[in-house]
Image (tube, rainbow, N blue to C red; front, top):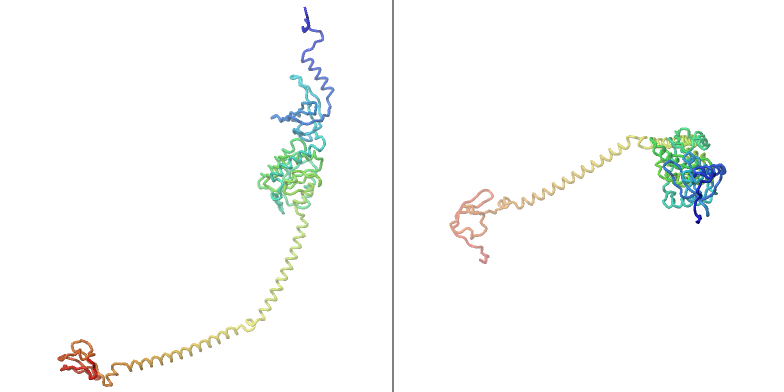
Length: 416
């Protein structure tokens, strides 16, 4: 009878359980790989609600699962993202319930600067297309700020340099510090939150300074992340950046309303030098005094000219001149009135003469008479209007005659 494929009838003395074998593997792996550096590309990144990061590192031939525990995450130099080439430090741990192993990461760095620069160019292009870096959206900084917000790490050297420079130039300002980590995983989220808090402070701030000392591209990477850039763009208060050294240019510098080359330079740009201000006041006072002198001299000269003018040397002459003018005008009007009266009198006398010459009374006095019908029929102009028997009244110059017509006849030369 064949025995091929059949299991031993009894258990060998050296056989182990799954748990026992896994425990041996775990002990050997974790002991032999307790301090390892691994390079690879980040893939399958997942941020759990617990705060842990689950990911995998891969190359052309293999894949290694990895984890970053929540407590380690803030200490990383850079937060891993999908597609990023990294070099990680950690230890190999075995997860016995699944019989799997993973790399527990405690340090993470970008592998060179090429990958970071590529990601930086990609993000820069998308944000620039939105207009976030456009010069026309930038606002001027206030000339004399009284309330200044400062977003930075409270333990770095940058804050000391900034405050020392500010105190020497413009000690009148009140500074409100909004602490935040400026490097490592999670720093970008903290910076964005602090910028939002600074923009909401009441009474409002006059300006917000976002500063950090120098470092490598990886050290400054938080200032190239999208949350920080958008928080600066959304700030209701003008923002000045002072990140790294002069040669370090981050996306935060490009979107800020003003860029300081260093934290110290940011303080210089925010606050005018009080000594320059005092010198300006002194110069302004001297110019004002000189201007007042010139105006006083000009006013004095004008007053002297007025004092020497004719109205002031002979104040009654204008009145006398007006009096003479009025007298001449009155004389002219009087003469004009007399001439007009004479002319009207002559015209009246001529009219009276013409009226007298044409008066009926004058005609009667010269021997003429007016004959009327006695019955009120009016003046008789023709012999036909007074037939025989008609009683007539003749008006003479000194009385009237009443008579009766016996007969009437036309004039000798009448044709009728």
